[in-house]
Image (cartoon, rainbow, N blue to C red; front, side, top):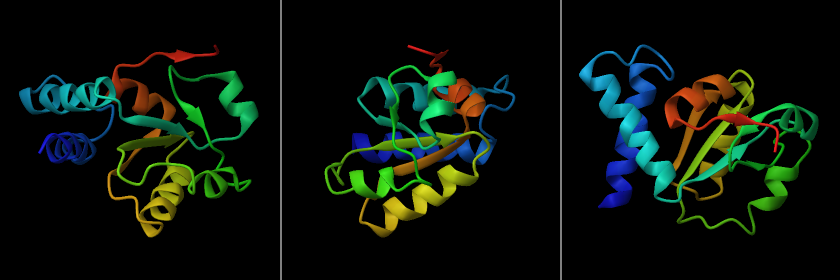
Length: 129
């Protein structure tokens, strides 16, 4: 049940526009749902290159580059029952990664688009640590 609520909240954020205006009640509720997902242990994956990740990433994110095959390699060790949030620079690579993960049997995968949108949606800072 908790999983369904979290994924529903994250999906609502996407429908409302990631990182968009959260001045409405719906926007605040959607942002709160994403923040709750992160607090509940949702895995955050940055699918950009190592160099891009080093220049700045969401606090606590893993770096599995979708374009060099790192993400594909990691799929065998990731838990398909866990919840995942993915992002990249613009949303193109994270969309590819979401499709890849869903095709591999991962059901709870959400694309938050760009790093800036992901930061706004999750409330997590962009860091270089």
